Length: 448
Image 1 (cartoon, one colour):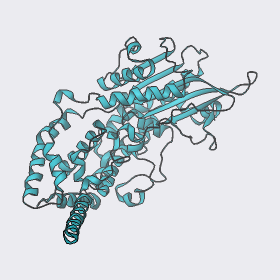
Image 2 (tube, one colour):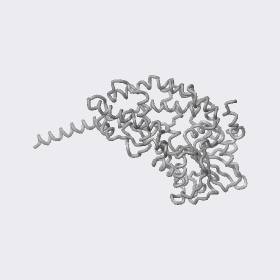
Image 3 (cartoon, one colour):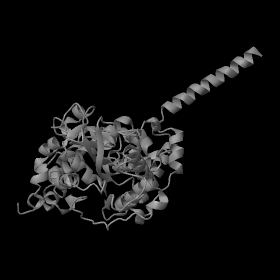
């Protein structure tokens, strides 16, 4: 009996060891829980779940102004076509190679790929998803809990200004946000002005011909991204992924990009599921692919060219105009826009500026501690908010401004570094050019 028992124990031990080794070899063990997916990062990775009201001694909030990116959406029509046409071919090839005994994917990863089918039709392009609705609803709830005086549960058209761009994803984000504020029944009666596609405040860059020609449509603006995509780091990712999949030929950049973007979208769409396409990539692969995205947005929307962020002055001027109005009837302005707006505003505010520019040549140097990481600063539902406070005594009050990004206080260069509130007069001096000399037509005209 002791011999049989010993044999059973030994067999179970060997089985558990093999199972453990098999699980450890699964690439789906990669932890995609925070800064990996660039502008397709779900907001739950970066949200501030602490919804307790800020407490500043002898200060009372007066007004609230915010710019909010739409929530998780579907891809563009182009990417949906690629997902529907190319991914099934790639999936079948990976499975075929695995059955031939090549590649390093484990059986569980192959089973997940076998179950995968395309999710979308072309007419679904860029529509807000259920996850996107939840992101905005919960964001509205948290902001209300922090600022109940400015964002009350009772809706009044005179107290709120809502505005979205003329896109389904921005409009539905705004409507979902109001569900978080007022509840589903009351939110149906909230009034929204008609959205404008080229809104001068919410999407100013659509009106900036100088930026569109010199940056957005200029191949030279993507020079660093091109160099990085053709460099050794990206070639190593291609080689590593190809070896992992058992490919005889190196995976193309197009297929690699499609795998990454599909992993990103499916991670955002399904909080409780793991995208099988993420299993094709290692942690090191994600770091390289993320940096490529950061390079792209740095030079197109960030600090790469002055016109990128200088053109955001209308949004800052709009905020100051609202705060400077003596009327206290309207408590909150809430805008719903896009990543291009949020990123340009962040750069205009001087936030997340690295000591040196992001380049193809300094990946290793910037890998660990760079500030410009769009996964963190421009995820789905990213938001920038300003709160005006009245502080001190009634006899000699002082106005101060709280700046929030991703629902957390941030301190701006030129404002006190030791406290979250910035005196309004100091704020105005820091952004004097944005307020007094915001000549958008001059900076954006092709004649200038």
